[in-house]
Amino acid sequence: MRAPLSALVLLAAAATPALASSEAEAAAKPGLLDPHLGLMTWTIIVFVLLMIGLKTFAFGPILEAVSGREQAIRDAIAAAERDRAEAAKLIAEQKAAIEAARGEAQRYIAEGRATAEQMRNELLEQARKQQAEMIDNAHKSIEAEKAKAIAELRREAVDLALAGAGKLIGQKLDAAADRQLVEQYLTSLGGK
Amino acid sequence: MSNNPRPSSDSDPSSIGAAAKYAGLGFQLVGSILLFLYAGRWVDRRIGTEPLFLLLGVFTGLAASIYSMYRSLMADQRREAERQGGGTR
Amino acid sequence: MTLRSLVATLALLVLAASPAHAAGTGSACHVPEAGHEGKVDIITPHITNGDHVEIPYWKFPFFLECTLPKWQPIHVGPLEIDLSPTKHVVMLWIGAALLFLVMLLVRRAHARAVTRGGVPTGGANAIEAMILYIRNEVILPNVGHHGEGFVPYLLTAFFMILTLNLLGLVPFGSTATGNISVTATLAILTFLTVEIAGIRANGVGYLNTIFYWNNELPAPMRPLMFLIMSPVEMIGKLTKPFALAIRLFANMTAGHIVVLALMGLIFEFGNLISGAPLVMATLIMVLELFVAFLQAFIFTLLSSVFIGQIREAHH
Image 1 (cartoon, helix red, strand yellow):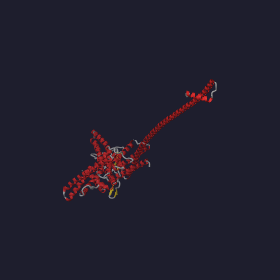
Image 2 (tube, chains in turn green, brown, yellow):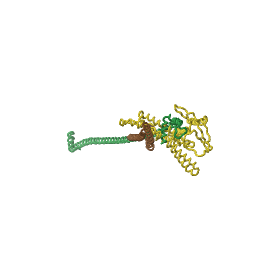
Image 3 (cartoon, helix red, strand yellow):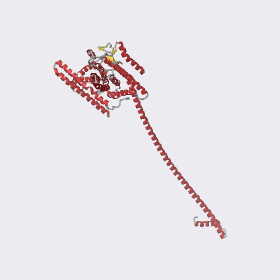
Image 4 (cartoon, rainbow over the protein chains, first blue to last red):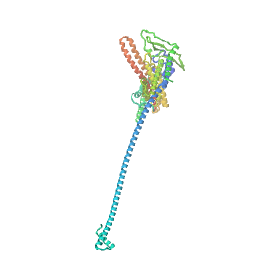
């Protein structure tokens, strides 16, 4: 119990320096537990100077450099992260663009195909119509030619018949009346 | 928050720190018992009730320092609980 | 200012501090008289303070005893302070100068490495790792939020205690941290730091860490509990630095006593059995090396914990 006791005294002495000096005077020869005011003062002086010195010349710069380094690493990581995100974004954008382009191309192709189809159909239709028209025209002109030919033929035939019959009956038949007769006859024979 | 420590790896240092708070408790116990012991002896000498206040002082000191320990333990526990509660938000 | 000039100035200062004064005030180095007969107490002079230092010498017995100068004590108010250098004062100077020098070298190596964009290598890196470990794992987690301001004090305390501890293990050295005055002063500095931190963090609430006034108690109980508990709180406050001082002092002193006692055994036996104490003394020295680090660490850790404790009191 003596050591803690005297140490307690010492602490009290340290707190109240007036006591300490009397204590120091009382113990003339150095003991293990004697406080020594000079040494305490020196400790404070050396410690405070050392603290200021180290803070200014060592810890401050070192910690600053370290935090600078940490900052640099953090920045680098952040930059890498950012770059990666950016790259990912770019890739996504590119992919989207490609996708869009592909869609567009698809659309163009489909559109082209549709247009072509339509055009073909139209052309076909037109051609068919033209063809039909041409056939129609041909038919018509054939018909006309045929009618003309038939009429020609019929007149020719009437003429021939009249001439034949006139020769046959030796007299010239009355042209108009006879002609009507023959024609009636021919008509009765049929349309052709 | 440029250079915070790593968010508590919760290994040795912090747990040592938690335990280290109580490193001086023994001294506190002895100190307060002694204080009340001497106070009791002083009172005894003043009013001549020889061992009464000295004994009372010893027990008062013991009880008071134990109560103080209990209080600081409880406070730490509460803070720890708060920190845990705050940590899991 | 360049580092080189700084170092030179420092070295000059150290040189000027001891021998010049020594010459001026009549201190002298001499070969210690040999041949004490009978029992000599080798332990007490070694672990206590004294007014002479031992320096290496090339002839037997390989050291000189230098008597340190005696200065007039100065008076500060009622105090008479004897600032004459003693053995431990000189160790304080040497330790501080050495530490400062080492730290400057570390800083220079560090600056050089940083401009190259890398990390320092070797010893500088080891010390940087120590600084960072103490700061990031011991100080900052324990002192609580915004504890950057306490870093210089606590780091300086750690490295100063470590340096002084280690200087005690060096031949011709002496352990200044084995002197109760030194450890008590360091503890008082910690005590002041803790209390100032408490005042700054808690304001008027700081009084709650000294006085006990519990409003949850029934009214008549309050003054009684105040009278009983306040001294206990105050003692609790004071015993923390007290324990710090005693712990450091006792650890450093005890190790030296053990080593010296074992060395004494060597001379006591004076024969082959001396090998056993020799081996044990060596082992204890290794242990001491560890203890030197451990005690510096514990002092710093406890100081950080105390600061953190008072800063988050009554939040």
